[in-house]
Image (cartoon, rainbow, N blue to C red; front, side, top):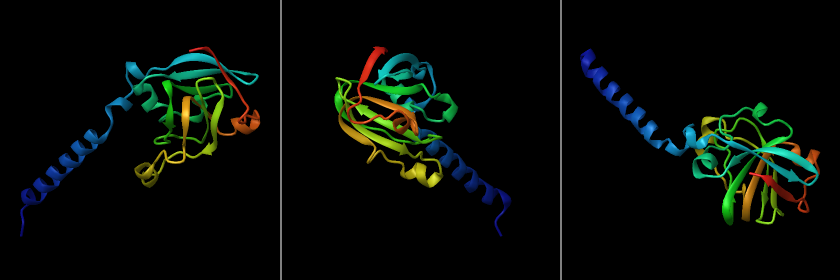
Amino acid sequence: MPTRLQVLIPIGVAAVIVGVAGMISLPSEVSIDANSNFLMGTVQLDDEILQVYIADNDPRRMRGLMWETQSFLADDKGMLFVFDEPGKRSMWMKNMQFHLDIIWFDENGSVVSIKKNVPPCITPLEVMSCKSDGVSAENAQYVLEMTSGYVDEHSINEKSQLEIISI
């Protein structure tokens, strides 16, 4: 019959290995630090003036709206992802707490793509399989995330235009 020590040592070692593996697998860029504090900017989408959180560097873009509650985005607030040049821009919903409407714009502020009511990845199974496939657009330089329902409520469509006022 094994002693307590013979049983507890392997369990303790396994717990340490699992803990270390979990810490290593978390991307350091997602941590909330000075680099991910969001500045505010102002944009105009059609006739609406919006206050937007600016995600203009890798740490801010990786963090995005993760872990925020829906109350973080009021009706006239959103998050604007800003890239240096147009390209394929994929958005993922990992650790999101609410559905979003996502609008992609080219360098001229013209709509490239719209996805409405994009669901978050919340459950452990969803988080493990959370992908950006199907939530992306080609030739986008800006991506605007708004609370779900915004696109329909404000009649945003492929003819809508984004104007950067200040970022």
